[in-house]
Image (cartoon, one colour):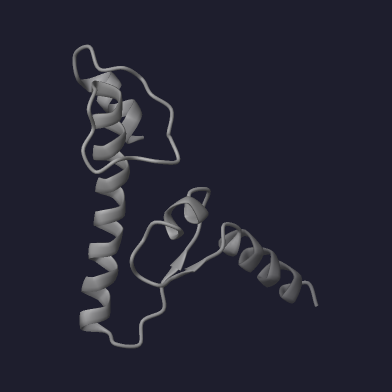
Length: 99
């Protein structure tokens, strides 16, 4: 969504596809966009995890969704990543309630 928002709501910025790598500092418009988006998201998620861990010492973080694996490799915090966690959990509840 961030890539699309930059393209839609700013003048003349390209509509880029997500990349697997991003330097800390870009050296072109494209690499700067990738850096800002990817490093920004990683910093936000890490910051939220740190906030929760400072408040709740025994918190377990479960990262789900399509970008779960992508993000889990880049976060400094140890987390549990399972891209189908919610789907499998809902299916388990459905099967459990059939009986």
